[in-house]
Amino acid sequence: MIEEDHPVSYALVTKNGPAIVNIKVTGVGIKPEILPTLFSKFVTKASGGTGVGLFISKNIVKAHGGKICAGNNSNAKKFFQWHKC
Image (cartoon, rainbow, N blue to C red):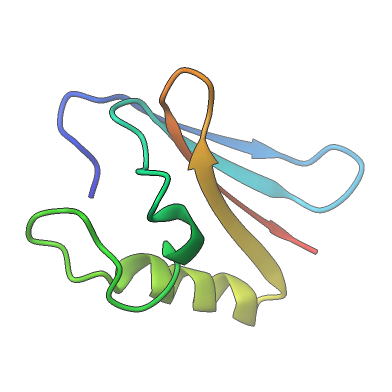
């Protein structure tokens, strides 16, 4: 779930290799304790979330030969990245 009032930026990078899609969201970031299981079924800390969105996203990206990852950068922005390997 993307918090309201937090800008989202998208970028497509295609330098010398596979395309990489970056999504950055400002806000509170992803809790460190949830990162290892973030792409598993039924993992959520959001109210009203089902915990299947990122699981489905991971499987779609994987089905197309890619990888997806997530994390926090130094100024508490969360990011998602996927690319074809």
